[in-house]
Amino acid sequence: MALAALGVFGELLITLGLVLGLFVTYSLWWTNVQADRSASAASDRLRDAWASPGGGSSATPGATPSPGGPPRFAAGDDVGFLHVPAMGDGYQVLIRMGTSTEVLDEGVAGVYEQPYKAAMPWDPSGNFALAAHRDGHGAKFHDLDAVHKGDSIVVETKDKWYVYKVDSTLSETSKYDTGIVAPVPARSGYAAPGRYITLTTCTPVYTSRYRMAVWGSLVRVDDVDAKRTPPPELRHS
Image (cartoon, rainbow, N blue to C red):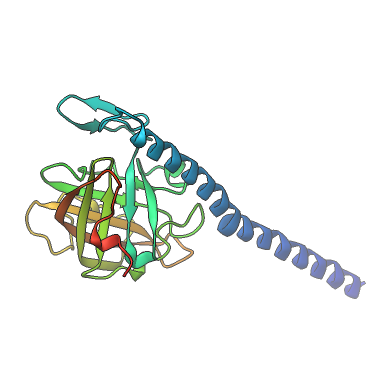
């Protein structure tokens, strides 16, 4: 009787292990597949809109034209692309307004709208703060820990390349530490307003216990030419 009970218990453990294995496979593989498909399709739509004749700077799906200036974006609008060479040759991720689960699960880098509304790259000052998943749902910031002081970060919009240089990083802080995305981000080393970028994600890997951050400051703005020639920071040697 005892042996039979142990056998049943063992089978239950095996079944539980299989279920957990399938769940992990779904979380860390299938959600990546789904998110990458969604982000790829959205990226194609954005680039097609940019390339449309007479599209102008407001040729962005969902964006509201702003006479005499760049378009205004609302939650869910696609803004442009983030390029971070330290995270891999050819690395790019679509930038979308908002950091809700629904936005980030689409395999994009989301622009913070709360607790601080992020400044946009073209604003005269402020912090262009972004978040993305570390694992699952595209895992676009999985290798954020590979970004170090002195590395380049480039934001691509329809008309401009915004080139930033990483000034400092933070390997771990509380997930409640909202100061890291403030207009003058706390613990970044910045003491006055400027044109900053912040990249954040969860840490350690496969958990959401803490947050890590990368901070950079704008060093240059390049015009996009007819061939969309990338700036030197994105050209392979």
